[in-house]
Length: 416
Ligand code: NAD
Image (cartoon, rainbow, N blue to C red; front, side, top):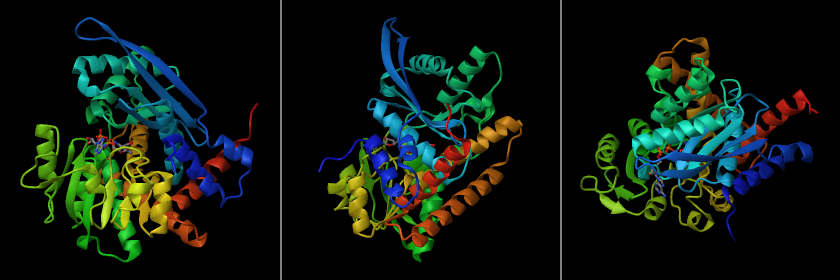
């Protein structure tokens, strides 16, 4: 059977949950589509003086619970359907952790490795200029995603503020601390991944210090998640990035692997570790698998070969719906993306609150509040999973989130 694209996967996940909810079909139909998608044509001057055109998108999925919120991705595979899916996952994620935001996502079809720093700056500023009518601290608040980080967020904020002739740090999150960023934001996605792994082990009555872990993707989410899970006492035996992976049965030193990647650009070739492919990593005989790269990493066929019995999704959409079915049948416990990586948007919310208050929190306060948000959300999902006898925790997550979004919509009423 062919696998759906990420947007179709999202719609299938919502339909799966709707079967357990009493929501009118016409309301549900609304919750399965973005409210609007902007497509922009970005022509920037390259360093050699020639012009080059790039395609960009911003999808605003649902604003019933608050301003649209979600990252900006720079990748050659960015597409309209991908940003639509990612914006939807953001809406459902914000509802699960109950932060007062809707869902949005943006992206530019670009391989950032092909551009110089100044070309990337011009591209980011061109994108921010095109998005200006749609974004704002009370409208739509972007953040980092694959291949973007503090630097791009700072450029975006500066462009918006210059055009608006104001100061509005809350227009974007994931900024550097000196530009109005929050303590703890860089680590937040990996931190919620760690909390999700810890909580599911506790729920299953298992000891995480005995666990072996494999992590696909060693960027922001994957490398921080790896380090914090190692700090819990688990053994991280394999990690990978787009160039391949490394394996050491005795455990990798996640900090040393990160330092190696910072120096060489990849984890491949680290120390005396064995090399392995991404497919080999995903089917390793480990206790926990953490996909932290891109969508559709595990399809229905590969899911049959996965040997981990716990999966914690740091990436957005790493399992296809077919993979989900196979893993549910095999009793593999999956902590879904919309909870496991929700630390990013939760601390983005804290950053936005701090920007509005013009008052900075300590890292300790940020981490404490994050801990409380993710553990409460985990408990709510497990409660729905057990009390409604749902097939898996992902369905529980969509049941909880769809209810919250549908309530916000129906309470507000339809207009015109
Ligand atoms: P990143 O750009 O920092 O890192 C991505 C990593 O994935 C890199 O190491 C890259 O080499 C690797 N990768 C890419 N293709 C791969 C492949 N085919 N096989 C193995 N590795 C591959 O990005 P990130 O911010 O860490 O995002 C990773 C995932 O986490 C994405 O799905 C993103 O949407 C999700 N996420 C990120 C945040 C955040 O705050 N950064 C928040 C929530 C969710």
